[in-house]
Image 1 (cartoon, rainbow, N blue to C red):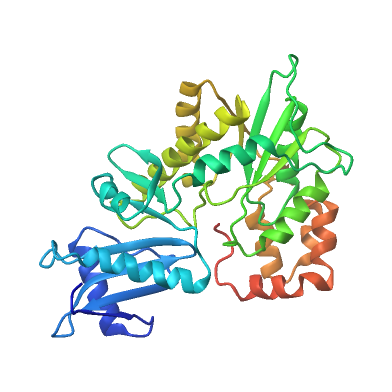
Image 2 (spheres, rainbow, N blue to C red):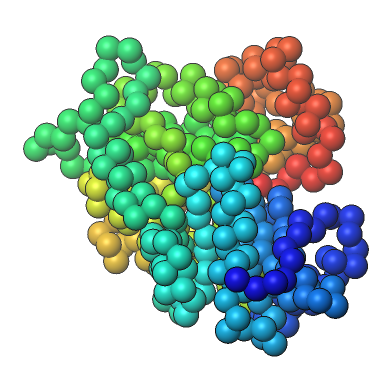
Length: 362
């Protein structure tokens, strides 16, 4: 154990944050925009020689100055970050690291979930965490009808089993169109709802609106995504060289994890919505269309539902709410979504959306 001091770095501490930016840059790491805690390790001259950060239940942006590597400082940074997480009540922890440092974190008790060769490794601090998640998926299925058995029954006639991953921030007619099409074309539809609360509309509300609007579809199995289906908010960008690399890495990691889920649930189709105006989604869908068939999973890209010649999107709905034009969302969303946003229950969410500077992106 070194005699160096580790301290929390506050956002308004410009001098310390400048040192951290410089340290990360020297070690080939970009500072992630999604951070909610940062620490710095100071030497005797009050220079920051090591750092680490948190976001939600993930550890990220960890680096030690090349002048001090080999002193065991990264071990101390990780230990400190884990202590902070435990104080917060987070015991199931995740991190992303480069392939050549995965063994180091393995020695600290982290287990590999998925890997994108020559890019990154996704790890957690539970040895059987992901395998337990897969077993849970296999043995449970939330359905909308109270009389339904929660276990999925596969018969000889069960040929097409599809999956949809949906954030629905909030749920629109575009989402409903995609769900209805996937449900109509398959025997079983596994609908994974992104359950992390990194969106302007909380997950409890998003889940409720999804299930209310799709309650007429009897062959849907609903799943909370849990921590393994990765969103834009939690995916790291800090050790990838450019935005294109970030998108590619995200897609490949997501698909590596999804393939394990698909094998467990016998999924042979994945549906995605086409996004003509988004370069990110375009690249993502292209990679999905190339990679999924290699695992005998068909990738079906559905053109977006339009209203008055324009594709319906959650971004458009959020922008209308942001601008105080609640009535204008009525033709864009199912009745359950509209009724929620004109009720007093939505007041705090509307206020949050209206206070947010940019509501167009995820």
